[in-house]
Amino acid sequence: MPLLEGKKALIFGVANHRSIAWAIAQALAGEGARLVLTYQDRMEKYVRDLAEKIPGTEVIPCDVQDDGQLDAAFARTGEIFSGELDSLIHCVAFAPASELENPFLETTRSGFHTALDISTYSLIGMARRAKPLMQAKGGSILALTYMASEHVMPKYNVMAVAKAGLECSVRYLAYELGEHNIRVNAISAGPLNTLAARGISGFTGFREQSANIAPLRRNIEQSEVGDAALFLSSNLARAITGEVLFVDAGYNIMGA
Image 1: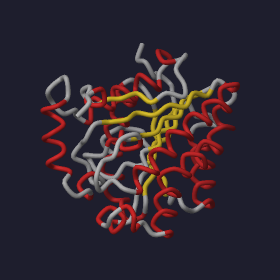
Image 2: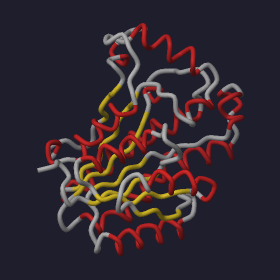
Image 3: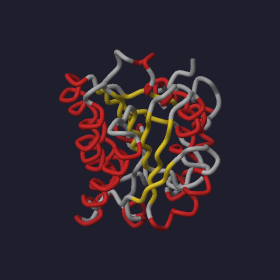
Image 4: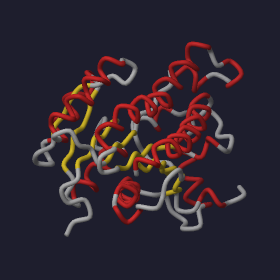
């Protein structure tokens, strides 16, 4: 029997075919999960086109900065899935381009607020709304992070602060939701050629460098993050919560 046969998953953050969120969607659907994908207005066509590749997938709009839209998205998900949800996937992150180009010392108040609101607080808002749909049977909440939360990565700037906050939020949510058998984890993925990554200066050079340094002597692929997400969303990971799983060909263990 497929690992996620009959399971229901809500995925935030699909933008195009290179999105990590899309790789996760494919992995979960490949093991039997039914999907709901959300989209921002400007990404609607891309998300709808991708959703058509997985029969039965529903798409709904949601701007994670708008509490009304979050309420509506989870209400609609509850209708689609008959009041149940097994997996919530958070692949949402954003900071204004100027905050990644300018020195970290010049981070603006508005840029800081935007980055942490979208990239960090949204996980808390989603988890709160997912709880009523998950608490009857338990479930899995999964977010994406990056090792810049622990090590300085030039030009990652305020996004590194947001990821550190996200990882801390994972631990606190895991603690509070554990009594409902709701697990909360994060995947720290290595550098991938995504829409978000291309907005970071020097990304291409760093990706080449990481392939030389990582123990496996290569970069990862989106599908490998998808497989890790499948594991963490499945019953195989039933005793794992509050953790950050590195999927980076081992780069994080190296000293340089």
